[in-house]
Length: 130
Length: 130
Length: 130
Length: 130
Image 1 (cartoon, rainbow over the protein chains, first blue to last red):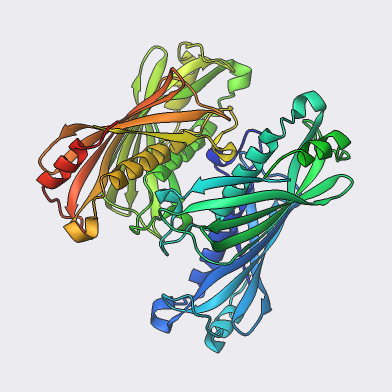
Image 2: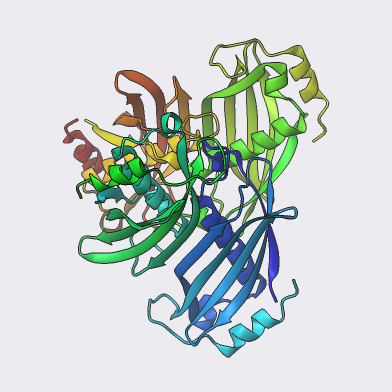
């Protein structure tokens, strides 16, 4: 089960066209993912297992601008052996703004060596309420 | 034909893990694309035709860090009727760092109404030397 | 009377040294100031009077890092004829993190021509409760 | 003697008002300072002496916008016992854009404990040509 994370657009994130500059959406997703990871109370150092972003796909359906609050729903959409996908759906009120999928690869803590997703990590994600 | 655009990583773009924070890569691509658009000498206001980012796909092959200079190659990889894809390949020296594809949609200048890619725009991109 | 604005530090805002990168503090102040301006319900376009940042002074007393929530107190600290100062005090819990003063210059809306601070603007700021 | 560092404004750094968002100027100064420190070939880890930003004062004289290249001159403007000031002067062509002073405090490497500026550090800065 996932979570909902809200982000209020900041003035400096809006560009000349009056909309949030595209790169900030990845920062928003990262912030939502970070909040999700924290809510799992997963400790990379203690468990010896951490994650790295491998791939990101993001598609925009409409703009967000100054004064908007983006509600971002976060949930796992695929479990692999050493990787998993997290889906993000962003909306302002009832209006869809973007959808994104980030692929994370599990690694040994402090390394770039792939390591299988621990069963306890998967179990932790299952206990979240949206 | 495309262009090569170089970006020197700034200290503030490097995160706790010692690598460039993922969202900055979209800003790097935007900066490379902006440079590419300028090299075309295309004037959205005069021509009445502008572009919007619709989708971004980015995959990382390795990290970039403090002191690195990213060489980003930019070129069109697909032409559609009202949209086109621009491919980005980023490397530090001979080491591949990332690949990305951004999908741009043509719109009437100052609007969000899709408009076909002008033949003159395609022609302009063909004259660039890498 | 001023307001209090809270900002939760994002992962991508923390640098290699494990602390919020210094430039983000100006973005935090801007976000706090923007929230303060909105709370005044001041409409630059309708009133014909807007502001520009002229000067910023910021001093750090200690670091903020990942997971911290910065509470920023915002209030006017000086009224001039065509300019005024806004003071910002940032803390994490009881621990002081920074103090800043931004000098804003009043200008005709859409211009860079200095214009006196309207009495109605000053009056609006007096009605805020902290 | 100082150095000159050039920064080309990126699209995503320009805000709704068509000018570089104020917080980016501190990032520009940091990038210029980082380039200056590197040119000194000072190794904080080996020497055991590092610096932290304590204070920043920045004043704007005019805007920078899309397509502008900021030339930033960097030089030490004050030497104290455990701190020193670095001055930054930014211009687009002959037009002054901003001036800034950052105060750095010397610390033991990896600590926040103040430590006197080494004579060898001061000597290194004296050898730079502008």
